[in-house]
Length: 329
Image (cartoon, rainbow, N blue to C red; front, side, top):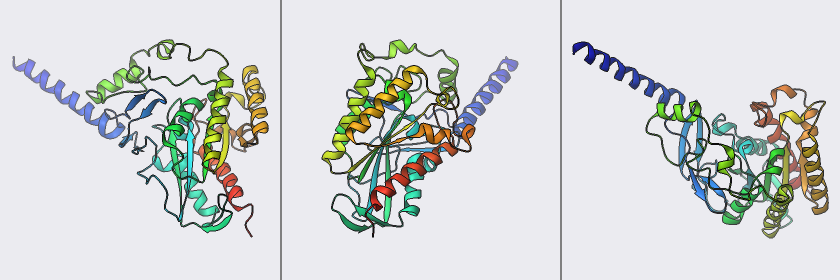
């Protein structure tokens, strides 16, 4: 009996030590929680603050990866709304201070030098600060982002930036089925950090076909996503603000072989669309191909490294500077 008690005590102690290690050092046991949404498909649950592998993640009351904000900016603050997917969001591998939105805010504070031309009123405005709001979530496509913009508006932003990846041109319609069923979209906190580690990384994933609404991929998917982009542009125009579209490539599109046939066709349709609608457009495919540190721009096939985030944020910020300073005297 004494031996059994010793074994139980050692086992319990080991389990407790593992639990503490997983929680305190790695951040398991406290994942970001998602909520199902009929229009958006899913949203990050409001008002969350977590750490994952040492990276700080904060979600505000509007399900943005941004700190708490006022519904409208202060008169001296130039606000930009960034709509995106996991590239814009940054995920658990990116600290809050290193997301594209935070990098843009810092770069704008430097580049704009607190002086801009307000395109809404055509008058010179001195800004004391800049905000870049980050409304994004993993695997969101244009139709998710459109639903979000319809729900919440543009928050008094002067510019709306839609940051997509090539894959987003093929994104499904919004679907709430993933919440609580796909391990990447938990609906509640796990009972323990060890249980999260086991279910998140060791159990097989639910087949993707079971997590898509019927008919979500039917019809002209690229056409549906282009129309969603068009509607986001209309929301910006109706709010009398600038609209900027930017698309990052997948790592496999870079280099000699380039995009695959279906990606080329989708990109051609996109190019024709932005030309027809006179949309300010940044195609990062040629920009990335000409980057001197091309191999260091990605952390996987889609998501960007810190160097990739820097390049994207600098390029978008420079375009915004051009928008606000084109009439500067």
